[in-house]
Length: 109
Picture 1 (cartoon, one colour):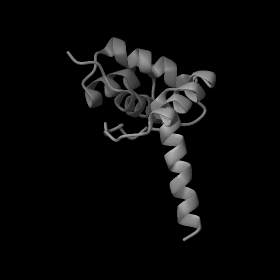
Picture 2 (cartoon, rainbow, N blue to C red):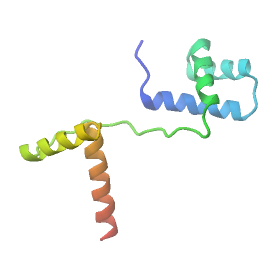
Picture 3 (cartoon, rainbow, N blue to C red):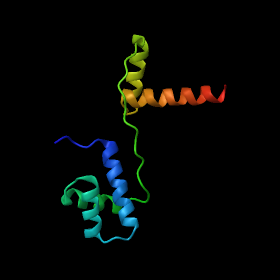
Picture 4 (spheres, rainbow, N blue to C red):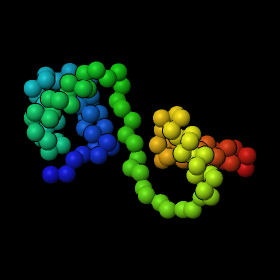
């Protein structure tokens, strides 16, 4: 059996949060969560335990897609140094940089 992705986990956690916010009993919520998401009752209870601690639903991240492109070696070295110094992955650094670049470009026309 394949493991759930972060997005799948977030969706189930949000479903658990929704059930709890409807003031359903724990056993009833677990049964509904198990049935709706094809997970075991044990897993449903674990999601409910986590959902109890939430103040609001969690953000469901869009799945990442692999892409390939070429970057000059000196830029790659700078990216790796920046990522290591800030405890980030290269993907996180590039996603943030590209998102900021596109946002700025959109504002300036």
